[in-house]
Length: 224
Image (cartoon, rainbow, N blue to C red; front, top):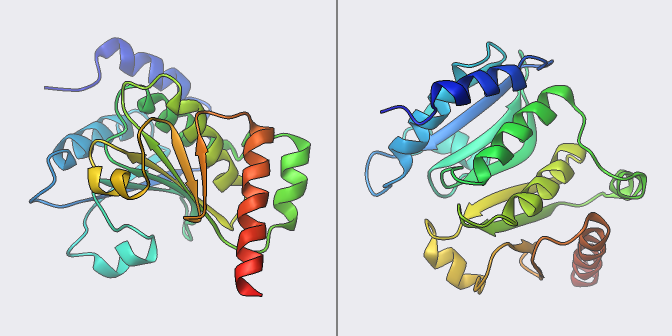
């Protein structure tokens, strides 16, 4: 049974009509021990059918272990978003867990933003990102029924799209409960930056920038 209704397909075709650069979606799954892998594959297959500029590559994490390590895929299902072409560019955008519910809209918006190369960020944020010279890893824990989570994920993904030093993961908390427990996720969205700074809720861009600066400062102190 298809996930997308015909009306949804028509809306998405219109949404994808102005894609510029090809977008490649690497979908890592496994046959065993992954209850949402098959669902994720089917959903992404349906999305990729809606535009010739969306390229889909289905991968088994075990068979493609080296590629999975390269992209930091340590759990499945996982989606890695690349800007396609002969030499694909890693956007730093990741989805761990099926992008269903409210997060499906985030996936669609990410595809459009990556294709157009237009992440909506303030001048102050862009100026600071231009000075960033060390990696930042954002993990945004969500659930499919959380109406506030897409704002947090979308902002993190726009940051990743704007800076090669940022990787931003959407992590579906109910699919990875051990990881959620490790990071003390008692409510969503919860963003963890470099394992050192935690952000509760879908905070505004200016506030998240402050948390990013705090994480960089902590990393600098650790190096010293």
